[in-house]
Length: 207
Image (cartoon, rainbow, N blue to C red; front, side):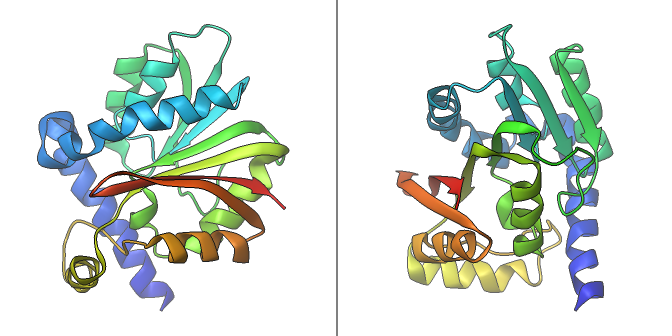
């Protein structure tokens, strides 16, 4: 099982290394873009001083946040090429790290907000990731997840496709599934919405 999980991670890394240069103009990049407004609103409502973007990609969310000079910004991604492009886009405005979301290089109780936008469905060990997020999130901090979803039949078909795809997608979640897994890992989810027919956003606090 662990070997299979590592295979999914490697598929994600390879796919994003190959597509990083064109990601923002690709189908995937254009699919994610409409989520930014809702995710940014949720981040700013939390009135943070420190924000970590897990699965930061080319740095688009952080680039928007960088307009506020009072924010300390951080990002993590598994793809070397994505981090390289994010560094160019952010011009030193954020501390960016190459790494695995299951074992992040920050001290416990570090961040006011952790955001994970369009990345959670790539994680073969989602509980490990959530537990690690809980470790580095401040006790009164906010976790914000935005991710693709689909109506039940389409979601079931897409989840079957994930098993054979080379893109590293692992699982699309329903409202009940994402909220349950958050609860199992010590979070209390709230304010779930469908951003559009193909994506959702949800906040959570540590219980």
